[in-house]
Amino acid sequence: MVKLTLDDYTLSSALPDSFEIRQLQGDYAEVAITLQGQRIYSAKLYQSDGVATFYELRQIIEQNMIARGLVLASLEISTVYDGTGEEIDGKYIIFSRYKNTEEFDINFLESHFLVNRTYYTMPRDKSATLPFFSTGYENLSVVYNCELERDGEHYSYSWSASMYHGSYPSIFNVSISPAYVKNLADERMGRDAGKLLSFTIRVGTRTMRVFVIDDEPCAHFYFRNAYNVTESVFIFGTTNFKTEVSRKEAVSQNVTSFYDKTVTRKWDVKTVPLSMEEALWYNEFLESDMVTTELSTEIDRQEILISDITSEISDSAKDQVSIKFSYRFNDNAYWLKS
Image (cartoon, rainbow, N blue to C red; front, top):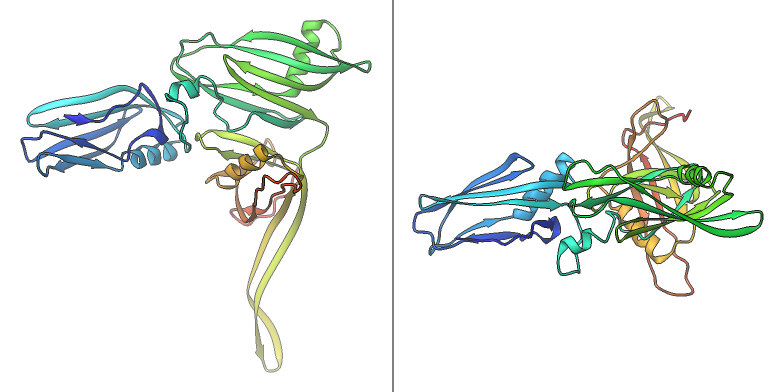
């Protein structure tokens, strides 16, 4: 008997580290793990006092999802023991580094986007994507609620748009584009709607507020977030370019020469003052195993390495939270931006 109970939709962080197979009469049990239709692990477990234990279930599944870039994966666990078989299938795993505080993971998934923020601050001419999970039992539509300014007056305007459903369950994306939202408002109102100040995106009970600003970010990165989803981060603050040269000296016949020269080019970044929510989210970005930046539309995104991190978050009402870090390209190149 397999002592493992999973919900139909489970966050990977909620997976147990191990599970037991009890009441074994034979010497061993065979266990196979299949993820997204691909067998990723199999083992022969020998029993002790009629109990065999499978270890590191969560680590095996999460490591495979990270390596394959999976956010959502179907799971099947098959066991054979004492000449009989038992299967756990029809289950889905959604990658998450954080545990859910609600009773069921599906309740969290149906009320949250797959980002750990409730609002963004975005330049007027930039865009990003907002991912979420859906089982297909909800009516997928996007509701936009805009705050605009025209002729010195502030007003709100709302509308909804249906989404392409596709297959279920699945990960879906909503575009976050101030320019797109502004154009839609102009079209629906039949005139210039004015200056877009902010807008709220709602899908079901999931909500995200976007504040639109005219400032340009000092850096723009993409990172693999806590749900194994690629997320954008616009950094507002200051950037300093630094070149560090290290070399050794040699003296021969009273002539000095250099050898073993190493040049490291990196950028130091200091953010503007951040809210507590922003600072905690920045730490998720700084801890990411995959960070890239886009230099132009002609080449692929380039991987960067983040180092020299100074992140100390205080809930003091007097102290402002600012984060410092350094980054460089993983190949130590100095790209000329076009």
